[in-house]
Amino acid sequence: MSDWSINPDQVNGVLSEVVDHIGEEGGSEGMLGHMETISTTVGNVSETIDSFPISVALSEFCEHYFDLMGKMVTKTASGIEGASDATTAYVNGDLEMAAEAQSEAGDIPEFNPNDPNGPV
Image 1 (cartoon, rainbow, N blue to C red):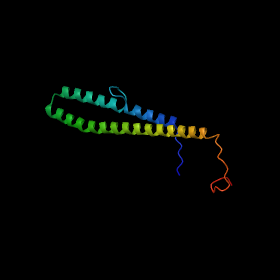
Image 2: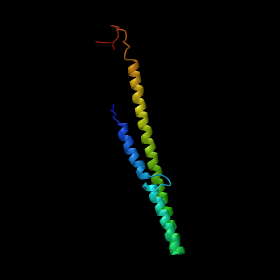
Image 3: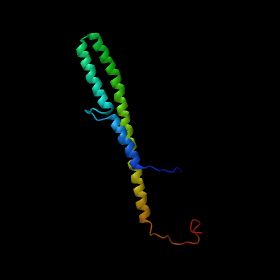
Image 4: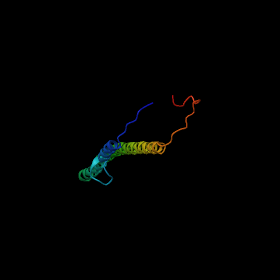
C-alpha cells in the first residue's frame, strides 16, 4: 500500500507560481502577455514595412506559433486544474477519514472469545 503525504499549501504555492507564468488574458504578464506583445509588435512591423510578401510570412509565422503557444497554455491550465482537483479530493478524503475515526473513537466492540479476528 502506498503512503501519501501531500502538503496542500505547498501544492497551492506551486500552482500559483505556474498560473503566474501563464498570465491572465488581456494582461501584460506571463505567456499570454508575451503573446499579446508579439501580436502587437508583428502588426506594427507589418504596417511599417508595407510589403505583401513579408506580411504574409509574418502572418504564417504567427499562425503557426500562436497555435503552439495556445496549446501550451491550454494543456498547462488543464494540468493546474487537475492538480488542484486532486489535492482538494485528497484533503476532503483526509477530512472524511478523520471525521469517521473521530465518530468511532468511543465505540468499543463487544468481546467475542470465539471470533478469530477478536483481541488476542
